Image 1 (tube, rainbow, N blue to C red):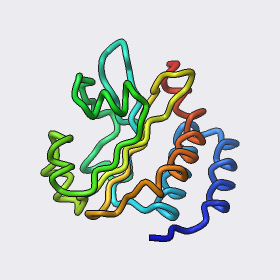
Image 2 (cartoon, rainbow, N blue to C red; image 1 turned 135 degrees about the vertical axis):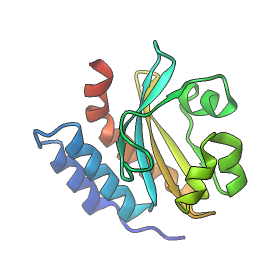
Image 3 (cartoon, one colour; image 1 turned 90 degrees about the horizontal axis):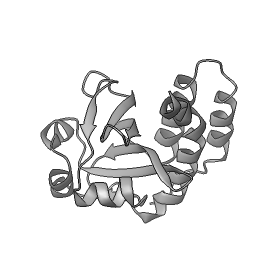
Image 4 (cartoon, rainbow, N blue to C red; image 1 turned 45 degrees about the horizontal axis):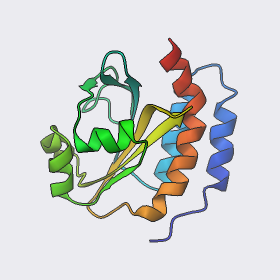
Length: 165
């Protein structure tokens, strides 16, 4: 599947960096950019708290289903080893991939989401958080990784504000 050129959306995220409403302005711009270029039904941003062994949701485009402030434990699961500790993106293409990785798979399915792209945001060799895009089955592929990683790094300054506080 051919995706739209992200250039105009990159400029919008960079413009959001100038807004005083941080991290919200940047997170909303990244959400809009990824919706337009990669696509998603559900989009969340989680910040990793290594000392607490938790990840906390700081942004959600569907706050009724996935409210800001929700926390998930960081475990030794293969997904955590890959994404949080290894810094590698994860693509799940099917309902079964969702079920295998996420305890809340029934809620995810109820939102019409059967595929996922989790993109770690890294700084100095550490994962500070993840961008999480979910959509219909088979939506994401390796071709989406470079663009998603680019927007993930544009989210980094806003995410760093949170991780330092």
